[in-house]
Length: 467
Image: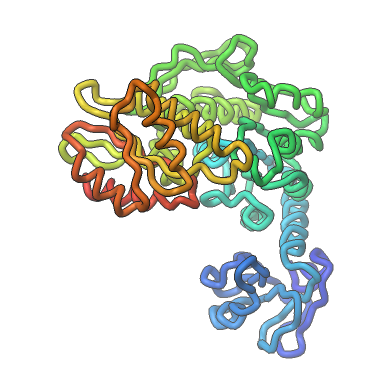
């Protein structure tokens, strides 16, 4: 796009006084809010953050070759600038225009993914399938908010055939905003749970926010919905799109049966509309990831990918994402499962159940657990529930890390069937010392917490120690 076209798209004022450029100058570089990622010909969007101001880093972006700065006030720099009222709004407006232009070429199909858990895993599975079919753009890491999602959309080119847009939210209206930027041809809702319920203001608000994925879809679109989640099922009545259900029950259009979890992953048989079936040797650890695989299968089949090709692509995926059920270690038969990128009651329960399923029958299971954050009023009772679950699953040893998770420890030690199997430590360093001094050959160690607790780095450290 030219500088003038970009200025029009973002409703900004183009400033060229100090730059050797004309309104017709074409810009085609990477768009970013991180000055460290700016390259020659790139666009730097100066975003005000909670703790810093991106305008401070505009000189560094200019030095690295930025062809354009999108700013909220003019800067004394010899680079073309577009001055806007709100740089985040401008970023979204630019993404909207780019999606519109690429879609007008007639090749682009968009898949939107939301849910309280599993968004990034499902997005990665879809990318693995769709990139076998045609040029595919999908978010890096968990780029799913008002900044990350449009940055992903701005990676589109004229040749892109598939965009997989992960759409997250911390409040009502945020997913609707992303859907307006890039309305999905296929919209997926995975699950509605208590993740971030404190931010949303309760589970009802969470349901309302996640339903925004499908409320703006039209008759020719497809809503891929979780048939096993009672909070997702009513969303079928909120959309004009055709609904395709996925799940474990007979009512699901895309369903899994004969599920067998083991230390190398999970095998299952999938059935799709029309009755075609296939056996999937899925290497991603954890039975709960089968639901994410079903959602990816449903969306891929709706996009015209043959089931055999979908299964072949899924079977090549060995890791959903770093720090998500990532299997590490190996020395003395010790297995470290690092699942500490994030944690909600649902994902914590699923990880503990997986630990119990895949354990070496001759050895122990150790769960190193930190706080589940952003649960609001549900925090106490949900930490209690996880403590009880660990006991009832027969986890050999709990190591609870940090004051925010202490209630989980107290609940576990108060359960009558245990006697000292739960230890509380204040820091990740103490947890490392405790685990490395007490682990035995063949043990399986799970590390799980919300991102804010920082235990993913503890998981990496343990993985390296037992490598």
